[in-house]
Length: 194
Image 1 (cartoon, rainbow, N blue to C red):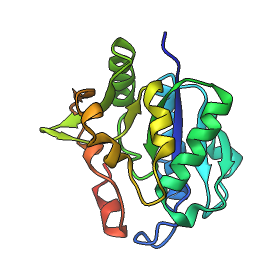
Image 2 (image 1 turned 90 degrees about the vertical axis):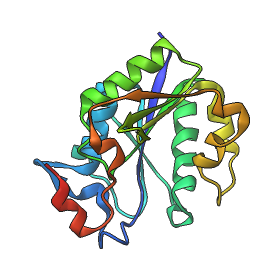
Image 3 (image 1 turned 135 degrees about the horizontal axis):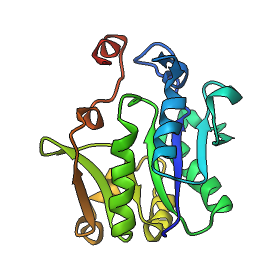
Image 4 (image 1 turned 120 degrees about the vertical axis):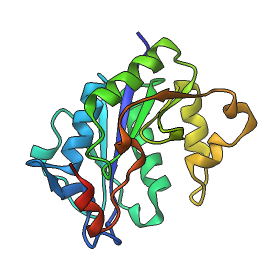
């Protein structure tokens, strides 16, 4: 089986939300714990949680390993790089499931199905798709992790997705889970949680 690890991006301050999203709660668990559960459903190992603006308590980590990104204010790409570097130290050459904490309502079975699709075609970049639109999380094959690490601080993984050599490798898995399109950024967005 192709090795699949996970990076959970939980370092942000949640400026639009008014507080860090990682520690917000839904259904009795923190948003970061929901993201870790999604990674567990995908049978990803290791799972790396990147903290920054707040310290993530041990009880919110489950089986995940926590790393701190002291330069988190530089943006999400900086935290992704920190998480991927840690993942590569723990499991060299593994693929990366990249999750954010602002989608706690993505069903774990959706992420498990995405991981199964990836394992059937492990050289492809996988995204869930709902209603003809691609969402999150993404799975990057091991061959593309170095390319992600090479992106500059003002770049985004979207920049890599748009490159011709990646475009042909992008695959979408149709899912019946609208949450893959729905990131929660503002207090009013929390009302959409089921």
